[in-house]
Image (cartoon, rainbow, N blue to C red; front, side, top):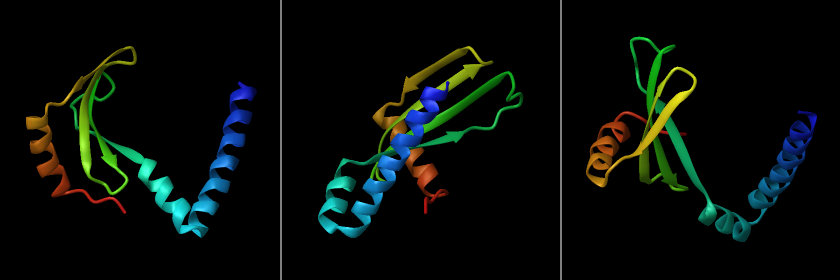
Length: 104
């Protein structure tokens, strides 16, 4: 387990050096953000969260435009599945969630 912690610490230091470089150089910043994407997971309310849970994961561009999504469902710790959300359903989800959520 110590090896993964050491690897994580080394990778974090490398990332911080990269972020500092990006912060100082507009060309590096542009190149970095062109490659970047993000995901946001929204956990939906359930009556028994210890027994059952579901969520929507939105995948975005660096600018925050939602480009894809998936639905995740689990029953307990071990039974888990995820489903791709269709473009039609994605439009509905995008409309309701972008009206109420903002990332800053």
